[in-house]
Length: 280
Image: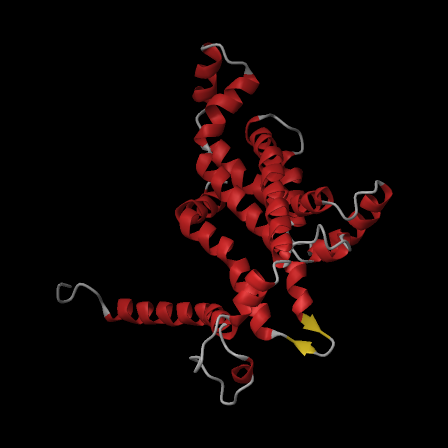
């Protein structure tokens, strides 16, 4: 039971505004799911049916039972997203550590460049990458998409991880080296486990970027066997119309990994992003 006077009128107003904002953000997700279970005759009804009159799972059955071609796109997305996450972590952890602990000349300029690259839209990077990958015959490959996505996630990962390394006392490494570790051993065995929350944050964000990429997939691939789910979704839009219920059914399934990752790693992602903005 809430004690009288425990919350002020300002608290209630803030809570109402927060609830309203949450509803606004969640409405597109609700509309996506509702559209996916509407029959064709309800899709363009006016006024629109906010609750389906005759809900059906026909779109899900068609795309995931009758026609299983969409699973190839889902598998490709998992390979690309997982590869992006692993390559980002592999490169970002030592880079962030070096920028945090080593006496590197021009460190400030490097950080400014990393920050500036976050502002570049993917389409500006996609065309130079296409030319470069064409010369080394990497177009239409998972490797091309993983490298391309990593160019976008790596600066963000370094900037987020560096404050974590700055927050670890230097005595931790010195103690490890006294116990017999060399510099690399102290990094992998002692320092890296201490920044696990930061690694989880960066890994989750990198996976989601790789999962949701469209520009690099559109630019660097033309072979359907390596294209991700974002390109598979575009198959439902054609010259003579869009199969909205089919499109929304696949989009609902495509959103599941995002929801699961955020739900399971929410505290790490929020604290990780907050730490990255406060400790540096």
